[in-house]
Length: 445
Image (cartoon, rainbow, N blue to C red):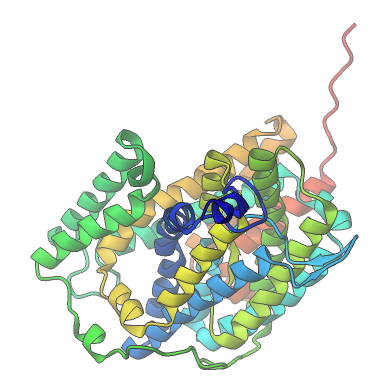
């Protein structure tokens, strides 16, 4: 027994197999931190697309399965040579990303889920190209640009959160005091645990808030378990279950987001290695991570899973605990995979009332917005930079909020520019950053 313990790796080492007693709770911590964020985009898209109960369950299942497989492929590169590897090989978690939600909502309302998946496949190809050319493309996306994009994503998600807090725009009880009471209670629990607790309660504040809000909603008769009773015990997501449709306007909108998220992934990879391993990521790790990000999203589109990206909250856990062992994060992925293969678990997630999700996710959206602000303020806020941020956010948010502003344009233009503020903000920010002259500080006399 002593020899076995001697051969077990430390959880603070990248490679090797640690003891199960140490690894399992640390893995579960990662799952707790991200599972609500992973399935909520699928629930939002399912609502926007008007999917029935079985289709909603299938979309959530696919989200969990694809997130798990994407994480495993990133953790354990299948090809590794001196200058190239396929997969980052770093301690990261992949999951369905909120960054795509505004565009996915617009596409789902105008077209269907198949159109999202078709655009996702194209986006995966874009990510592969970005990964192969990451050194040349990276200068186009300094912190002022990525910060503006993330900031706009956060702002654009607020209406979704408020509509959910009110019960869902299509709900007969939309705006009722019961919805607002449950949403407020959920938000209070999440905020309270974030600021007044420590350890697992702080890390799992969103999950704890959802559970607390769920119990209150159930007590008010707002929860139905009919879908759980109808769901099966085990089901593997069927390939091409939703199909693929290639709509040019949707492909452009999602493709741009994939290019942005590819660059954003550099930040997460860098934060992981600098914060927990005291080094910058190697070129092959960055390139391999982004290329694999594209490949897994192509596979995800074929499997019916929504777009995935690196999860910053899990990066935060890694850098805080300095637990970098890949087997720990691999175990978290296996837990996600198991949950995704059990339809009853996915069906249970669909019973969460929208007001509970709204109360829990409004703080997530606020955090996304503040992350954008932090990136923006990491550079000097001179007149040039404030012009870039201000104009990009103004045009992005303004055009999307003025629903009739592009009424005279073709439908494809409305889909690309009128429904998601992120696309307009990104194009504006990149263009202004290339066009506006740099401000030079005068030398002291």
